Each structure stands twice: as structure tokens, then as C-alpha cells.
Image (cartoon, rainbow, N blue to C red; front, top):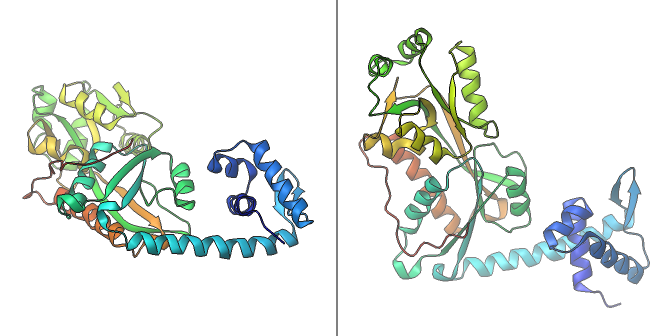
Length: 330
């Protein structure tokens, strides 16, 4: 019996993803077209592969057996591709990085620059950068469409592994040009003294992340738990816009140190309170378990970790100059 490779692959993806709609999106074909292809496969095998259970399509007992063979076949092909990829000269390699929406690309670009500085100019791999929600990124990682993901959320899936889990302080900052009484009093105080001063002050204005960003809920919890008045003058889902608005004296803000370290060193912004910040902000670098031994991924992981160490070490300068050519597809 001759088997159509494409039909088997479509069935494998549909079974692996757990739904026709998700599989169709991944395969970039319409849902009716995918359903039609699966119907052809069932007719050629003379078996039923899926059955309707409630609102969901589930594998039949025969479908489960056939899926187990398809899984072995296609996972073996994936492993072969990985072996070939790992033996490819780095200059011909591509590393595809998925970044969750709440992380600034400027920060990721610094990681990429540090990563590429490990290679001579003619041996640097090509870097492709894409942005999405954690759900979207994990879906792309699941299908090996990206190599790594950077996110502020934890990764809880046996198929993926956290390569690095770094923490940076959330710090209270304001413009270095700010000369009002509140700022002068706050400068040089520890966290407890800063909170006391904020409680006494009635003219503090806030620049905060928008509600779509997890950081906003952290800020809200901190301000509410300390009963600090929250007069918001500007909100944005862009960290760079928040940094700029603080620099322009619109208000105070709680921001991750990694996004404002250069501004503090350049004395455009000043940090208020203890150097350790008010709470920790976590960043996770993850990959598929199959990629954890890839030397290019390991090098990227080390660059990621090293940049955080630079940020947390005051004696070092954080800014990493961009090294050409850096190819980033947003």
C-alpha cells in the first residue's frame, strides 16, 4: 500500500496539536481543506482516525496506533534535521527567537549583540526575532518554528526546558531633572523611608504600564498594599514609552532595572530607594528539550545570563554596542 506523505503529516500535526483549527493555522491551510485531506487519508486506509466526543474530535483506537507510528517517523526526521543543523557551520545557521509582548526588543537586541560578539564576523549565525503572546510562542516552539523564547512567565510543560531564570529588581525611578520637593526628599532614602514619604505626599504623579502587562498588576498590588495614592497621568504597553515619559518629567514609575540601567548610568533617570529595588522581576529563557545541547543555543543562553550579570554589577557598563550585521525580522 502506498501512503501519501503529506496526508500522514497532516494527520500527525492534527493529532499532535489536539485540534483541526490549531493544526490548520500551523499548516497555513484552511480548516475545510485540512478536513478534506484527512478524509482522503481515512478512505485510503479504510479506517476511522477521529471520532466526535462532545464538541471535540478525538483519536479512535486505530487512530492512536497510527499516530504512534507517525510520531516515530516524523520525530526521527526532526532528530535527523537537528543533527544536520548542528553540524552546519555557524555562518549558515539561523537562531529564531520568540519574545513575549511585554519584553522590550531593545533589551533583547542587547542580548543578541552580546551573543553575536562570541563569533568572528564571518561566522555569525543569522538571528530572527518575533513577538507574540506566551501561548503563541509555546505553540511555535512546540512545532519547532522557533528555537528559544524569552518571557516574564514561568514555563510549565515537560516538552520545554528553562535554560535560564534570571531576576532583576523593580526600582522606583524619576527624571534626574526633577527638582520638586518630593523628589529631593526621596533621593538617598531607603525603601521604608521612600514609602513613608510617598504616603505623606499628595502631588506624586505616576507613569504606569497598561493593564495588559503583568508588571502593572505587580505595581498595583504594591501601591494598594502600601495605601499609596495612585494618580496616573500616563499609561502604555511600551516600556520604552514609559522610560521616555519618566525622562520627560511626567511622573514616577516602577520599572525593571534591565530596561533603565543605561539611563541611570547616564544620569538621565535616578533610582529612588534601596539598590536592591522593591521586588524582583523574573525573566525566563526557554527552549525545546531537543535543543538544550545545541551549542548555538548554549552560547545564546550564556550571553543572556552574562548580560543580566552586567546589569546587576554596578562597576560594569551595561550598554552593548550593536555589531553588524545583525539581522532581525520583527
